Picture (cartoon, rainbow, N blue to C red):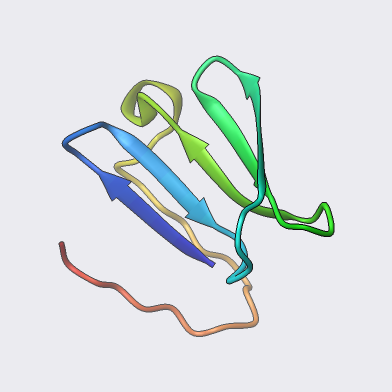
Length: 72
């Protein structure tokens, strides 16, 4: 899973999978869900993220994975 914030557009993209998105559905204004060819959720796109999510803070709890931080 990857979280990518783009300050120039104030958008946050959450990659849930490495699969390619083939379909997108806007579920509320500025929130789009991306699905692969099998209908699995592969990503979430949030426009105006700074007003819809607390992007200044990220808490990771009990994930069975390593955590990497990439300064941008």
